[in-house]
Image 1 (tube, rainbow, N blue to C red):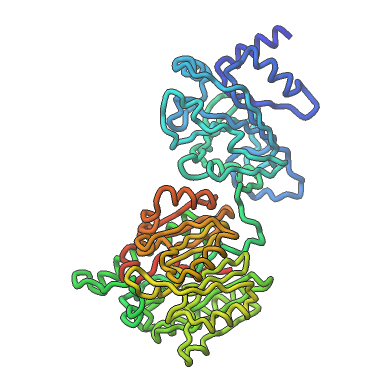
Image 2 (cartoon, rainbow, N blue to C red):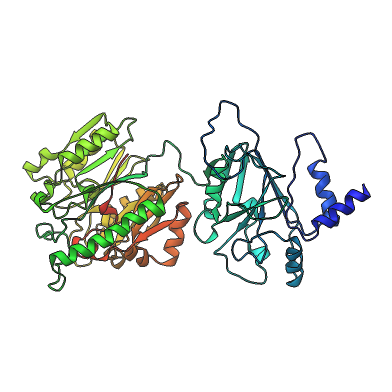
Length: 525
């Protein structure tokens, strides 16, 4: 025992993590090992064990993963000198670095979980070490203790299922892994790999804190967009949309369109690459005669609140906007989603009763409450009929004006409703009875972020909650809107949005078209 103790002490001097190997029921127990370690290897601060048992013989072996299967993977916090991937792990350097800055190392913390074998190279040796780095953590003398403890990242582990804190798979707390061979300490072909990507490649089933349920109805991971390839100032809509501005002579129609398309491509990249939203992308031509086609949410909406799938089309005020109801888009949506119910409200156009989709409707889908700012584009009769057809529990109608006392043309520029947080410009609702009804209804189910007239003009109300690639609620908006919110308001929003806040600059589109990010997105349920 003394000889083994001496051997352990010699090999583990300066080590911050330990791989516990061996089959269940064999070898030294984990608690015994940790008691021994506390006396002769106090530098060990974290131990995480990953066992990769073989899959059944019927499992597919087509994976081309370069990570060896049937091995154990030990996740450790990277040493101080790991300003990037290290070519090899040197325990002596770890020990010297820790002593040099006088770091008061934390007590041993243990997390153990089991994974599935990853088919690929059979591998050899005793296993692999994954050194986790936080590349965006500020550097200081206490960086050992500043790095996130592993047990905060791995919230819960049950067999092959791991619950992660989403804060540590992207953004400033992103975890990056470099894989080393246990026997040689040499880096393998797997390095600079994000933690989520690594765990998925090892065969784990990942979920995230704050993940929306499968029956979640408030937000979607899919949207339909129409690129502004024939965009121009729509004079017929400018009559009551006071967010719109004429194109300057210097820009001209073609110049403005080119700028808008550059902005729009950035918006598309933000949605698809950053957030992971699935986008059904169309374009339009000048021959369509639809200068505002990039705002498709006004002419159709889709729903799954009733237990079956519903497609609704709407009556629009401007004649050239009615041309946006394109048969090719409708055919496509119906083909890929197979809606079992279609409701058409276009017949109200002949009576000049307009109701422009989710521009007029801001929906609390989960609680079946519809909020509508009445205007020339939002008729109360159609709103009531909509709620009847869609079997909504409540309609909350109100009148609203901007700072110049002009009616606000669409509800979705003054308010937005997410799963548990709502944004609203209550100053716009000047009739106290209506304002109280609006606030009381929202406050029963949501935390309210109140915005000013000025913030509304920066499109802070024209934001949309979506579901990101991880199944987490996220909010998307323009950069103007993001900058318009105060730091405290953004903090409140983030507390309800595990997927974060994402933004892209679309200043020219907002300036000329009078609509923000929410207006460009037709949710697909």
